[in-house]
Length: 327
Image (cartoon, rainbow, N blue to C red; front, side):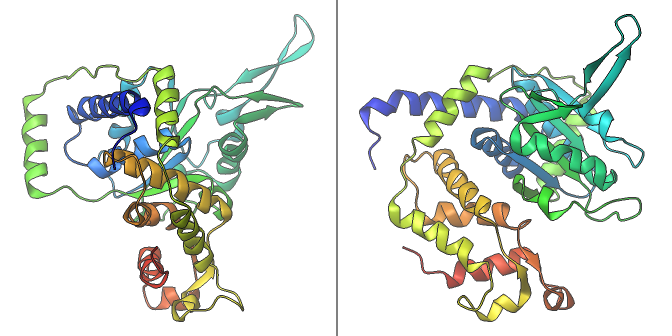
């Protein structure tokens, strides 16, 4: 499909900016292209991203490198079992000189927030993020304060450690645009990591995206064309994840609760951005299929039968994609 002439310049500019950003991060991070693209997808879609992987896969380092390429404020919070909600959002502080309580804003008041090992904090601390993630504001005392725009939460968690951890509640998981599973590098990538670290060079990461650039990139992503039949396909996929009396398939016995309408919106946004990453100005069904696991895997609650058979959400999503007719 030919790029319309009036959008060609903006589209090519956006492609160039994304390429420069990935190149800057790639000077430090070896491989992990899917993770980097997932983080950029969250940035362009205006959503938050949850990274899950075993220790040592450069999850935190990748987030910090990406933050360095952005001309935005960045703060990092190490989640621990003794963390308090006020340590995240802020609190009211009494000033004896004036006899007044004044707000002390916490580290959540930033553009890019790294919530490192988010599942190490208790539920009350995790819940403190809910208002910020969904409504882009924080209430301290009786006053609500808007968060800077853009506001972007990147959280990491370790799936293999259970001692001293607290599973994220479903309500909070649903606030994340994507859940990315970070895998081990290949042998060639690990050899490159070894040699790069052995050289001991401190590489400077260039700033590639300003705040106004992000606004323009989001406009370009929103301008990607999506046919009405693909919109209906997205709705059908999400509807098929919800078992009920009128919607029953053999794999529905493995699902207790399906995806929410928020998943429909996020699938729509992410499919457009994936098409943009593929250098296309229109969405095809394969774009929807490519982003479906990242958008749906943390929104589908498996049944006891699925757990007893060691089924994963990704396997259930694979069955969904095979069952729902493609336009």
